[in-house]
Length: 188
Image (cartoon, rainbow, N blue to C red; front, side, top):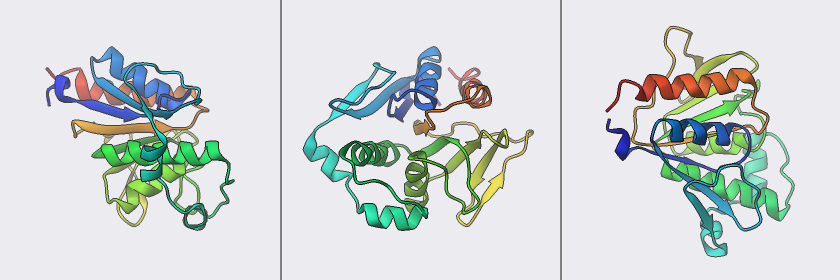
C-alpha cells in the first residue's frame, strides 16, 4: 500500500483522535478530521467542517442508539453533533480502529462506543485497543476476540478510521504509535 494513497478519517478531538492524527502526520499519511462549528479540536490538519445539512445526513434516533448501547445519551446539541461526526468517520473508513474500554456487554465505553457500534452495523473490520486490558481485540461479528501480543493488527485499507477516548493513557498512545509503525515503516 502506497502511503500517498492512504487517508486517516478521524475527528481531531483531544485524546485518541489527536494521537491518531499525530501518528498519521509523522508517517506522511493524509488526514481528514470531521468536525462542526464551535467544536474544540486538537488537530487542525485536514479539517472538514460539516454544515447543518451534512450533519443531518449522519443523524439517527438517540432513543435507538441508547437502546443499542445499553446507556442513555443526553439529547444535547453538542452530543448529537459529536455522534453525527462519528457517523462520517466510520462511513468514510473501510477499516475502523478505536481506543477505549470494551465493556461486559460488548460495547465500548463513551461516545467512542457509538463509532464502534456503527462499524459493527456496517460490517466493517473493527479493531479496539482496550486500555484496561492493554491489548488489541477484533470484532468477529458476534464477539470481541483478543489479538494476542504476537498478532497485533496492521492497517490494511487505504481509507481507515481512527477514533477513541479523550482520556488516552500511555498504553493507548503506544498502541497507536506501534500500529502506524507496523503498517507504514516498511511501506513506500
